[in-house]
Length: 289
Ligand code: RIB
Image 1 (tube, rainbow, N blue to C red):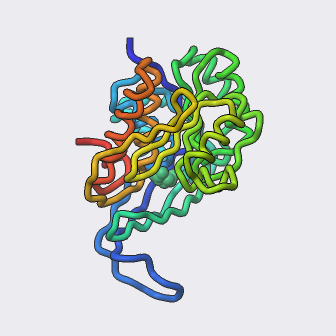
Image 2 (image 1 turned 90 degrees about the vertical axis):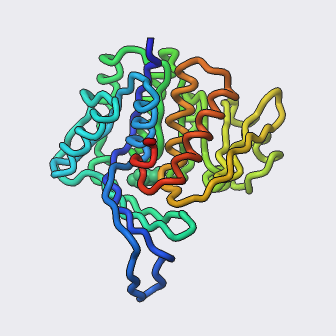
Image 3 (image 1 turned 120 degrees about the vertical axis):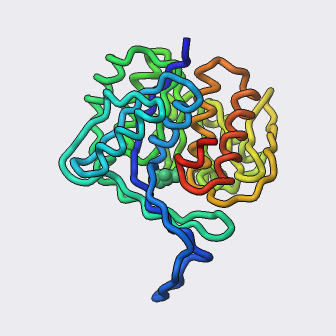
């Protein structure tokens, strides 16, 4: 049986400009290249899990624009079930992105329809989908929608994975209904109020009483085993475009958890997929071989 995963979250159209460096105030620069593609943290995580072979459902909200059909088609092409996508009048989410020559990105998200995801409809969808092995969420939809969906799923015995990106403080209700909390270093610092280091991770995780994994970019990731912090390294590669690497990690990790792999195996898979993705241009397009 395939592992069953439900992702509730955002879908965006990524408009990526490849530039040597980001322009300064009042400056106009010529870029090197441009790509339009499919993105949104929720969509990216769903697509990664779909590519790995899970039965993936996405609960997202699209606008009544030209991007809607393209996005649905793209989900289908990547093994993601689209029966529970909501539609509202107006624009779908879009994300202008600048990627510099070191592969680092700067992203602006204009949420559009993502902000109008309806929580009652989302819970009705979850009832119809039946119990997934894992529910995944991020912070590009309203916090109260995540709260309600996570509470419903967690109380029904579903393992929940929360990626607090873009950085925002999760509410207590949301945290109480989270099995795996996966920030990156920057998000860790913004949420906890202290810089990421091993001592702070232990303190943070003890307070939370949930499993915590912190992604560390090219340094790999940190997790807790037998009450001490372990660092898992990743391969060194030349980064071309880091956009969506965190989502590749979360999608692949969720696949591992849903497949009942050991934690180390989940993390190895997640690091491998995230690291591979930075060697290619594009967001979801970088998840493919
Ligand atoms: O994490 C990368 C994603 O952030 C992009 O796909 C963009 O759409 C924003 O959601």
